[in-house]
Amino acid sequence: MKYQLEKPVNAGIGSAKYQCTITWRNGSFIADEPESKGGRDLGPDPFTLLLASLASCTLITLKMYIERKGWAITEIKVNTNLYQEIKEGKIVTVIDRDLYFTEAVPDEQKVRLQEIAKACPISKILENDIRVRTFMKKDGPEEKKILYRNDDITVVWKPGLCAHATRCWKELPQVFDPKVKKWINVDGAPADRIREQVARCPSGALSIVEAGS
View 1 (cartoon, rainbow, N blue to C red):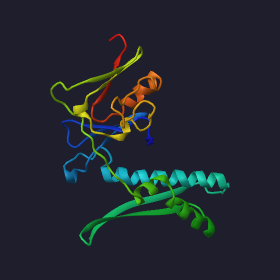
View 2: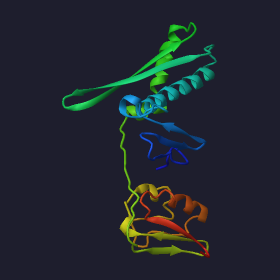
View 3: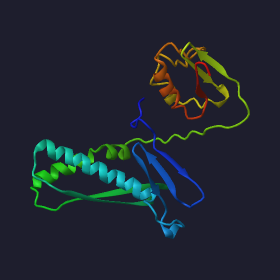
View 4: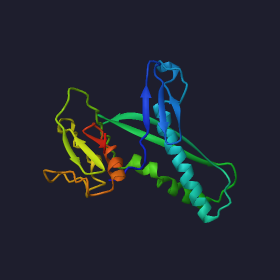
């Protein structure tokens, strides 16, 4: 398993309803709800963000394809929207994506670009199996600690906080092997790589104590 993003998208909300500060690798922006839902409409709402993700991914994918083909298409636009309905007791979400051009484009190119749009990465995510996993950082009294150390680094494991999330260890099997009792081998990889992997622990069960501290 390898995450798509090197750093996760971080979001937070405070007393101003319902403004969320979204932080990504190169800055931050506000997400909000429209006034009709109690917000101040100071940023895109969650549905808009979802549709914007699909729209931008579609346009980028098409632009890359057009550049590879050397086609004389200078501008593409897309509208996205969605609706939901109940079918057989289940909520079915339908997303419509409308492509259009500001100049004449041959029909055969339009057909091909329609096919390419369906293959954009966000389309594949939305139309395939999706699972959303939710982990909770646990706070509480001092937990049992097990230390794994060498001269460079100490990994602290708190079994009582462990959520058994594969993202803690799966990318570094030479260090983390849950099949054995002493499951952390701090000599299995450079200290920086271990720090990077431990930082992905969602529950706080794994942490680092630097040498000399």
